[in-house]
Length: 294
Image (cartoon, rainbow, N blue to C red):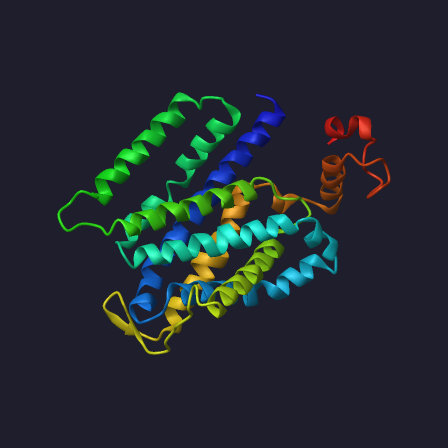
């Protein structure tokens, strides 16, 4: 095994670890947000709480990491918008709407069909059949989901719920794709803070035009049979199933970001643009050798 193979293996292992932790953190959110929805919160209010809370939590660190380099955000504007629209607002709003019509666990399982959708989309786009184990795993995931959800049971699940959860899975696909294509200079904390700001603007705009009204309550809620203040489940949703979950997911999709240095980031930017030497740093290779050198 070469050194490059060993490094790639470690990156894959760390990426898988981050992805599993992210899935656990995301999954925790459903049982904690359900009491808020049952207490009269609208789905859009719950999502706005997640977005605003996470934005305020990460704003300070994001500004420190950005260090006035606003050009990074301008260069990655489409990435930030896609993340805010699909991975933040779309996924969360649809998922929260789904769990008002079906069990949390079933809705989460449907949403987590996103990897299967990603396999199918990649297959169609590249015209290359995935490996046998990937296909087998995808088939087992779908069959297992059908057994758990049991759509044909008498008086069973409202069909709108699974449709909403499956549409949320499309947003998760966008989340995976964006994570795999991050600019080396766009720190995950900066990306997440900016995407949450985009999410807040979108939700407020939807509320103003009456598409997604925002209603909330400050009365106590019932969590696991106990009466607790509303801010307790809201804090868990913000700290665990939003801030931690998204950052872990980004780390899983691009596990090398934490070790990236200014020098390597500058090289990545030059290579991606095939810039001539000296246009962004002294380490950038000439255009003819950009890809090989990096």
